[in-house]
Length: 464
Ligand SMILES: Cc1ncc(COP(=O)(O)O)c(C=O)c1O
Image (cartoon, rainbow, N blue to C red; front, top):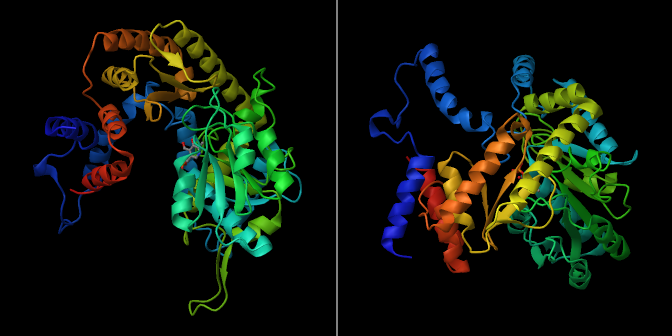
């Protein structure tokens, strides 16, 4: 890696991530006199106008999962009613606990959970995963005396599981994927030992959109009396309807006796605003381990089901409200549109020489290029306005299809741009925009230097 590469990359990153870096407009100190409301709103509108364009046109992978005007208008009204609420105070806002319980019940219902299922709403997929892993650590410490807990993770499991291992001093035990990008079940079986507290399977995985063999994994978990967490953060509001719509998914929920917890994100395909996910446990013994309760604090009796103390009530109410207006039929319909778009795009990609789909996903579609030019293709797509997600090991990128890509003309444009990007990349077009160079750079560094490199980028991002 020479200096020139780094300078070029940082300049590209600056254009993309710090476009407002004009020193004359920097705010480094609080204004003496408050600004006028109209001026503040004007400034915000200016930012949002530019930044909302890409997702509104369906050119962003994931990120905004619905974004329809009518839904957004409705959510604004909900915000207006519940903007000040905080579930930390169930005595002031008992309706929040009621709605949170109803979200858990509705989610459990679509996951074939029974009466014994317990759970809560968290701030997002990562918090659901962190809490589930902490729960398994504490539960198996209490029932089996495990003091050096290990979690078995497919290499495709979300980074949040590694974060959990980091935060809660647990050991991640990685298991490779098979040629279909599903975790290798036999290797999972071999990885179980007396310290294992949980096996993880994704439905589907973030990088490849592929559903792990949950049925087999849950069998192994049940045989060894250990936890089995299904990460349905991405798929929780799509997969329950996929089979009925004619797509093969296999069983993945509480109908499998070995599945002991499930995370599913209301703020992704549940179409709620950002800030909610649902974490479900098969029974209250597990849920008990998630709860923090303290009766001796000088500040009084204190208890929280999740990590935060005060929590915004609005996202919970909004997630509840969206579930109520969508209903099962609404989610079936959104899933139908998204899955059909996935089918169309997969068929289209298969006709483009020089690029291939990793495995056989449904609607989160990862691509790589035989000639190793995946990041270059992603980069050229970036120049055409597409904001896709880079993947590593192997170098690849994906598009997570949302409602935004189901609008007329978007899927055709994606395929047209992908075809021309693959052609341009094969002609040796240089990598020079967006996040692609960071992926390229990270993949070129020795493993032990990658997190140092990324931490420096984050520090740069969070400094004025
Ligand atoms: C499969 C999966 N799990 C977990 C997460 C983490 O979710 P969040 O970003 O809401 O924390 C994601 C995010 O995309 C995901 O795709």
